[in-house]
Image (cartoon, rainbow over all chains, first blue to last red; front, side, top):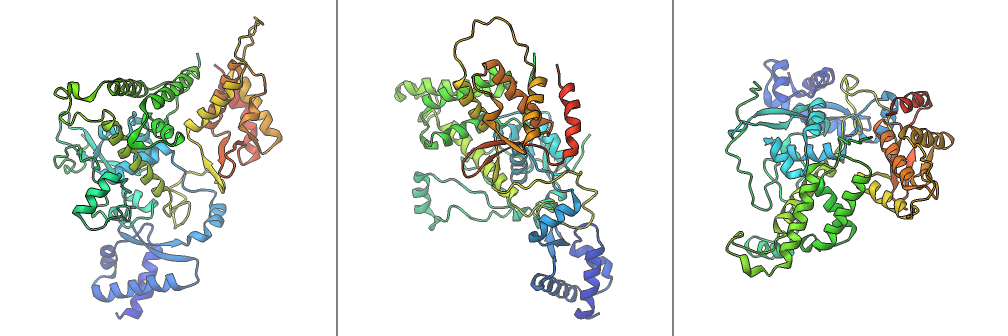
Length: 220
Length: 256
């Protein structure tokens, strides 16, 4: 099939899927079509939607593609559905942010960061399916470590974890001087992109992460 | 005794950041004595309210006092015992505050993402989100518990200091105050925070009213917002009028 016939086909598949559909899955469905052609068709389709005056667009989210509404129409859709994203408390949001940037992370590490018991918020976030237990850490007691779910990416409109907003580093006047000497001008407020989307510890006081959390999901 | 437990309690670091911001002091040069004093004032209020003051708050209070005392000593004396740097005793606290603040800010950024079910919609959302009416929050910001405690401090400071000689003990219950607040809200869509505390209220009434207000928030019977322009805190009635029938029930059941 050529690009122009692939386009409406891909469009219907993305439309019909319940969740963001990955390129790989799309290729499975297309069965035997050329990857290059499909990729080209998909990209053109995305651009066409973006340039159109229609209310919907194709978004790359959670490692796949999904048809979503344009944000400017949100007020009407909220009225239509009477449902929606239930606002998370500040405590839940900050805990979620810590997990997103520092995963895999143990409850103890979270509580050390927040300075307060976090059992309740962790439960809320688990119930909301935004975080999950992704393994255990090789420490005494083998504590479980938490990470974010695919649902998290879907809800927060993220392509992947690397697309998390960059952590703003607060640089002291002193540190700035030192930084200015060693590296090139970094005065843009430390907006450097971090490959894994995870923040590194400013104070250099690493929590010692001996490659924990790769034992995938054995909850027992 | 009535105990209020707030699951979403913000921690001691949050309180410290709040105080640092409020006093407009440099996070790298925290006036520990002044901040510690204010911190303890807050703990006082929390205890007055019988809020379950988490152990973490006590720990932080102890840490602050420890730092304060260390700062009174000349640095050089015990340089061998302490960390080799032997420098500023505030250092570790500052590191924790900065680290915490980093994620607090990150969470604000996350909140601003194009959130599914709020800013953008896709098919099949009905199954994923529980139903809940949306409110327009234009021009209003959510308050932290500390902002509310701050407002309470104001009200309490205006309360009569001397205990009246009138010995007839009024029996004020939270349920009474809940009904009182809901009555006020029944007439208008929103009321100001200060209007729920009639002038000349005793401390007992103020504290009970405040607790009633927290209880109502927890039950989602009211919403509390602060205007971005003038900083006025207002209480809002729930959106749909049908919920008002439940009010009575809930108010009664919360009686201890």
